[in-house]
Structure formats: C-alpha cells, structure tokens
Length: 246
Image (cartoon, rainbow, N blue to C red):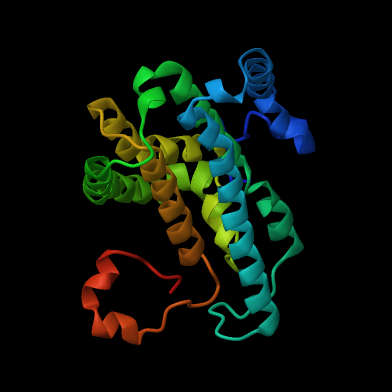
C-alpha cells in the first residue's frame, strides 16, 4: 500500500480474493454459448487467441519468478544482498491482476472495434508501425509519467507502493495501484491500437509486443544481472534498447 493511498488505489476485484477470475465469467458463458450453438468452426481467430495469450503471459511471468527465487537461494550475482521480507512476498502475490486487466481490455477491444475481428495472424507493416510508436511517443510519454510519479504528491499516493519492495523480483515490475496501472495500459495500448485502426494490426504482432514488455519488465527488476557488462562495451547502442537491474 502507498504511504498515503490516493483514489483508485485498490483493484476493482480485490474484494473477491482468490475468486477474482470470476470477472471473466460473462466472457466464458458467452464463449460456451457460441460453441454450443455454432460450433468451434465459427470461432474467430482473434477471439480464440485471447485466452492462450493470457495463459502464455502467466507462464512467462512464472518462469521469471522461479528463476529469480533460484538465484536468490544461490546468493550468487545478486545486487541487493538482503533476504526477501514476508510482507513483500504477500504484497506481490497479486501480480496476476495486470493479466486480468489486459484480458478485459482485449475482450472489450474485440467487442467494440470491428477491425479487430479481421486481423490476420501477421502483418509486417503493422509490426514496424508498432515498434516506431513504442520507441517514439510511448517511451517519451512513459518517461515523463514516471518522473511525475516520483513527485512527492503522486509518489506518496501511488508509486511508493511499488518502491516498498527493496529486494526487487521480476514481478515487482507490475505491483502498482490500480490507477497507476491504468495509465501504463493506456500508454502501451497506443502501439497496439493505432495499427489496428490503420488496418495493419495482427494477432502475432500484439502477442509479441506484450511479450516484449513483459520480458523487459521482468529482466529489469531482477535482483541479479542476466547480461554481463562487457556486452554493453562491445555494443554501446544496446543501452538505448534495453535497461538492466543495475
């Protein structure tokens, strides 16, 4: 919890506890109805890809969690030489909240944007547009939003919740109050939504973009270095393409 929690700190399904995945119940019922009445052959490719994409995100994050805990137990190449606090472990158990939120975004986009239903598996132009949008306006806006979060007003009400984790783990990257995570999602929707509206969106492009964000977030919050420093000496521009825990 932040030092002085602001509005929309709690996630909407926090009160549901372990039953929070029931927020997908309407989607599950509608899917079951479509399958029963029309069969699997009528299932749209973009719609069918949402659930596997969410499960892939969960597996991806779980692999990073296991790798991090293994390195912490070995006590080798760690950055902050301290043990994990039980309070931090309990606070970070809600790391899957952001996956639930992304699933709701995807299902809402499918229902509200007709062109989503027409997306092919891959579109090269869309992938290029997505990369340029991320490297340009999204990184710029993200940088200034992050700086604003470190102003005492927003820090005490929101961002201090994230920095309460001293010995960071990969999932520390997604431990934020609901309002803060909403802004992050809106920012990262820009590279996904604009290609779709331009007619260049693709299923694989979106899946890979989200996987890239997860990969960078997880690696950047490890308590150990995955990449040796000499890589940045051999290829200096790499520091503009990624960040490290240090």
